[in-house]
Every structure is written in structure tokens, then in C-alpha cells.
Length: 310
Ligand code: A2P
Image (cartoon, rainbow, N blue to C red; front, side, top):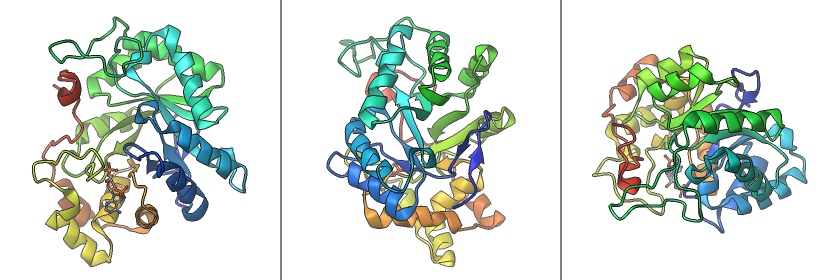
């Protein structure tokens, strides 16, 4: 096992994990069980909006009935945008706990810093195709999340998709400090200043879509951009007898960020885990970082008509 990372509240997290976004039903449970029991993963990243928490919960139940104990695995989930109102935060968390068959989460993240109208529609849109928001401030939602820590439902709280200025504001009132910002990070979107801000404030950074959000089931194409076939990455991989995916994971870890590559394929789940042993030279890390294009593969402008990152 590679050394865990210590969060600002002294809890520890494994330095890479298994992502479950776009992990389809019928595959995700087996993938999670295999990753924990056969490969050694000790960090699983979930979210209620991924629509697969029930199947993951069944896998956790099987796993934790065996040798691996609940306390051995760091489990994250995320509060969806329709549940930001303080009256809904605890119920949303309890629903996730029930689905995942857990008594507590290691980490609960605010998935996005925007509150949507509460209801059965997860992405309510106006006629103009713009998300219907609700007048709930991030501060109100954060206060409700802080109560989850006090109640023992979650050990730590944090955020995802927060920009630097959203964090600056959050830190002015947080009584429980966020331990984490989970953001889209890969060599085409390096976000160096945001990482630096987080690190200087003792907020750990998790890198989602570390492989460039490659060809999942809903893959829309990235205008020809594909990290897994990028020649710079591939050449560095050849020098180490490693795959491009392994180079991307090693690069993420070399920056002190925690990559959570998604896979439901056993061979790739094992291959990604093994990347933790790969050590890149400073020159290689710099060459990979120089590929930056500030290119986001995950941008809600296309889903919600909200220029979230502008
Ligand atoms: P699969 O589940 O079939 O392995 P990201 O985490 O950046 O969103 O990337 C996830 C995508 O990359 C999924 O399509 C996943 O497919 C694929 N993937 C995961 N691991 C590897 C790997 N080692 N090599 C190639 N593709 C991978």
C-alpha cells in the first residue's frame, strides 16, 4: 500500500481511488468488489447522481461481510444540486447511506456550488434550456453539511467543482473546514493556480476524469483530443513500459492530487492501481504539464446553460 494522505482534520485517505461516474448498472458492483477484494483499492468515489449507488451498496455489503472491514476503505459520496436546501441535506445523505448500505461516509461533497429546484427531476430546465435554480446560498447548504459531521453521519465534508473564488468565500464562514475540492484535472486541464490555492489552505485535491474522461458510454467525442493517444504521454509510457493511462495516474499523483480513474474492466482496474508504483522524472512531469490547454471535458454549460466556469 502506498502511504495515505492526511486530510486537514487528521483523517487519512488512500492516494488514488476508483471512480464510478458512468459505471453502468450490472457492471459497477462487480467492479467495486473486485477492486477492493482482489486488487487492493481502499478508496471508492460515488455520487447519488451517478444512479448506481444501490448496486455499489450491495457490493459493499458483500465486501464488508468478508475480510476487509468498513474502516479499511475510504468512501466518498456527493450531495446533488436538487437537495441543497437545509431541509433536504440530511435526507439526501441518509438516502445515500441506505443505498450504499453504510452507517457513515468518510467524505460527503457538495457536488456543484449551485442549488436546483427540489423535486424528482434531477436537472430541471426552463424553456430556454437553463437550469431552474433555487434561492439557497452555498453558506446555508454548508451549514447543513456541517451538522452531518456533528451527527456522525459523515466524517469529513468538502466540495467538488469549486473555483478558487468559491473556496475563498467558503473559507470566510466555514466552521468545519472543507477537507477536499474534487475537480477536473488532467494534462489538458492542469489548473495549477487552483491546486496551489488549495494546497496553501490545506485542502486536498482530488482529480476527476484523470484519463481525460475517455470513451465512456455517453462519450460525445472531444474534438479529436484524446490523452490516451497523445504522443508525449505514449512516449513516456514506452520509456517505463507503462500504458498511457498509468502515466496519467502517476502524473496526477506526482502533483499531490488524488486520481480516481473510472473503470469497470478488471484488467484496467488492476492496471490503474499498479500505476501507483510508477515514478516519473521531473523532466517527464514538466513535459506532461506543458500539454495544458485549459480544456475541460466536463462543463455544465452544455447541460444546464449555466456558464459555471466563466
Ligand atoms: P472502462 O471502464 O471500459 O475501463 P476517466 O476516469 O478519466 O473519466 O476515464 C474513464 C474512461 O477511461 C472509461 O471510459 C474507462 O473505460 C477508460 N479507462 C479506464 N482505465 C483505462 C485504462 N487503463 N486504459 C484505457 N482506458 C481506460
